[in-house]
Length: 194
Image (cartoon, rainbow, N blue to C red):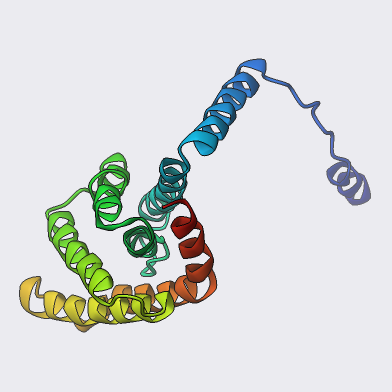
């Protein structure tokens, strides 16, 4: 009896794959649109791709992994790279459109988003003022400033315990990895189309 149950569990029936022509057509239209945009408007295409990566990853983190105290979305990475590669207006455009939209979609829009927008504007200005310094060093410097600002905000503005500094420290560690691995490559792509 037990062997029969084990044999029944081992046998898996695979369902045939159903092809949905509507979804294939929609995907093909989006891919054609992105290809045309890439061929004609490379700057807008790269901005859109980087914004989508940052926005979707922020949405996924807030929606599904908000309880884990690790900030792994590359929003600041994208903002600094867009500022250094395409200019301050492209970084600010990222700050005003895809970043808040990902927060609005999750229902997590709070007053702190406006304070963070001001902070990130200052961080982008710092990145511009640091000139031709290596992008890895710029990213680490900006993230270290963010840890210090986050400490003072948590302690004196919000009255949160020291534990909440884990978000800023994880932000520093993750973005150090982003800047050191992808920083030079993405910046070179952005400067090539600028």
